[in-house]
Image 1 (cartoon, rainbow, N blue to C red):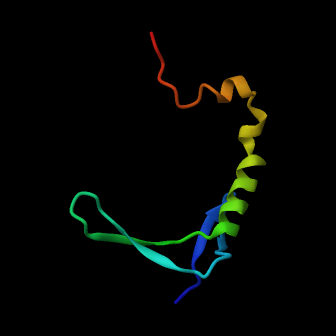
Image 2 (cartoon, one colour):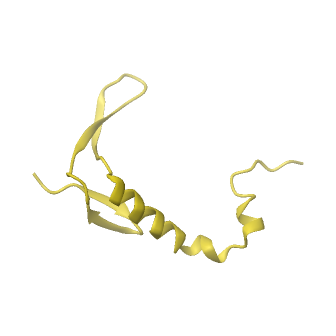
Length: 73
């Protein structure tokens, strides 16, 4: 079996954890639709560091505050 990998910072990398996986199931019919890697604490820290250093940091805080909010007319 190939080592479990996670996408972090636009790169696939091996999980720092135990390489555990779990089945992903469809909410529609509960059938298994794939297998995903379970991230460990080190993986979460690496993803957070990647996010903090990403392109979003160049966007001013007031503009980031409006991301995801509905547009009102």
